[in-house]
Image (cartoon, rainbow, N blue to C red; front, side, top):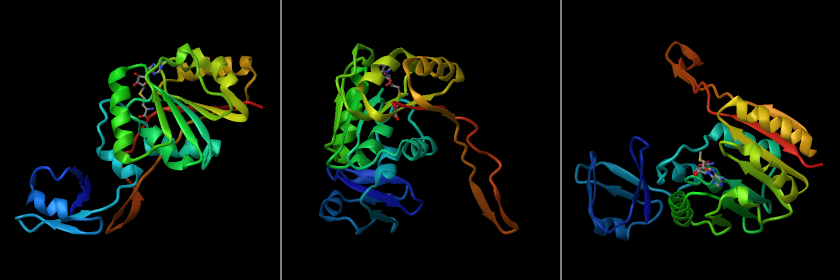
Length: 243
Ligand SMILES: C[S@@+](CC[C@H](N)C(=O)[O-])C[C@H]1O[C@@H](n2cnc3c(N)ncnc32)[C@H](O)[C@@H]1O
């Protein structure tokens, strides 16, 4: 597998089993097979494709998805707020295509572990293929309804991206280590509101609700200014700690 980027920054995965065709021309399969990271592949229209080693964001951009995924501003806030990193043990649900899961696996390293629960067999399969293709071995995907129980204990972070996250808050409390975090992502405030009440009742502390807004700037001849359009809403984040 070769990961390539064209002159416009568009990314592709090339298997090398067939010639690669795009609007920028054709690259012969023999050239793809013989190439390596750092090389340039030239199409018959003399257009350049560069072979790079993809980082997690490059990979998520072009991986097989088929469902909505968390976006960078929210993923970044989850890492910054909970402080998970090398060696952390994380439970994630639901897996979906595995976007935040790839980020979790990417940061916990060889000494950490991520367990991800997905109720749907088709999504569990897609996520497994994505994880394998990216090359992470510190992730276990479980084709299981998380409401049937969390098997793991002594966990640093339980992350929930579910329609009714509040259904498993007590279960989450038991699987966390002292000092561990729960992080809930919800598109709607209703889910956050119900979860907040149950978190308090369960004994969670240090509870906060956060919405992250990302305003991108554009550089014009006249000056630098915020772009007219921005992502108005993705989701709310609710954090709490077992203390
Ligand atoms: C929005 S997607 C998750 C996206 C993912 N967090 C990401 O960053 O790419 C929600 C997933 O949760 C799964 N799901 C819903 N209820 C579940 C449950 N009770 N247990 C496990 N997975 C569940 C759905 O099948 C769906 O794939």
